[in-house]
Amino acid sequence: GYGGLKVYCVTNPASPRLLDMVDVGPGQHADSVWMDGPRVYLPVHERGLMIIDATDPTNLTVLGEYQAPSIYRTVFYGPVRVESNRAYIACNTDLDIVDVSDPHWPTRIRKFRITSPDSFSHIHGLAVRGGWVYCANYDEGLKTVDARDPYDMVITATNEFERIGVCDYAARDVAVRGNTLYLTQDGHGLMSFDLTDPSAPALVTNLIPSAVPFPYDALERLWVDGERIAV
View 1 (tube, rainbow, N blue to C red):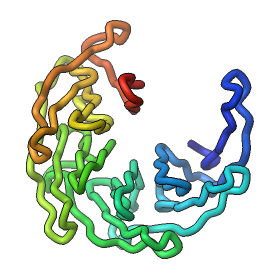
View 2 (view 1 turned 120 degrees about the vertical axis):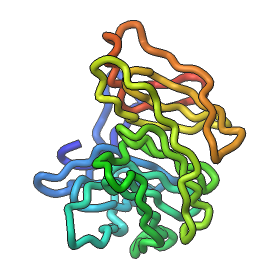
View 3 (view 1 turned 135 degrees about the horizontal axis):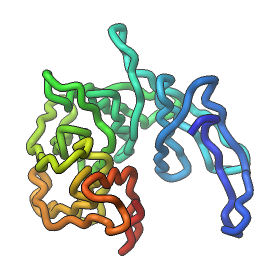
View 4 (view 1 turned 120 degrees about the horizontal axis):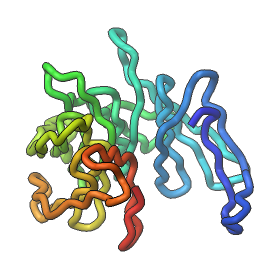
C-alpha cells in the first residue's frame, strides 16, 4: 500500500510488531508482493519492480529495480510472479518477462501483449507454473499463455464467461496449486479449473459466497494455503 513494504513479526498474532520497512516514494504505492526465498519482489505503481533482500527482516535492503522501457505511455506495474529466475510482471495490457538471476541488474527478456488489440482491458492477476502463465485479464476473462520459450510466446486458451446482471465482469485474481487453478470472477464467484492439460484450463465448479450480494460479488485477491482459500 501507500508507504511501501512493511515487515511484521507475527509470533504474537494479537500484537504484530513492525520490524522494518522500505519506502517507495511520494505518491507511489504497491498493490501486491511476491517472495522467492529471501528475496521480495515488489511492483510499485508507476515506479517499477523493486527487488529487496529480506534475509534479515530487521534490515531490508533494496538490491535492484526494473523499469519497462516505454516512451509512449505510463506503465502501471501490477502483480508479479517469479519462477526459475524469471519474473513475470503485469504491465497494463502486457506481460513482461524479466531475467532476475542478477537481482542488481534485472533485464527484460521479452514483452508480450495479453489484451486484445481493440480492448482496454488489463492484467489484474496472474499465476505461473512450469512456464505456463495464467492471466486474470479483467473483462477478457482468463487467458493462458505458453511462455516456456519467452521468444515464441502464444496464447493457447481464453476462458470467457457469461455476463451476469450489473457485474463489472472482471476476472480479478488467479492462483495455482497442484493441478488446480482458482479464479475470482465477477458474477461467478470463486471458480476452479482442472489443469491436466496446462494449455487449456477446464472449468470444474464455482462458488458464490452467500454473504455477498448477488450478482455483484467483486471478490478481489485470493490466496491458497493447503486446503484453505482466502479471498
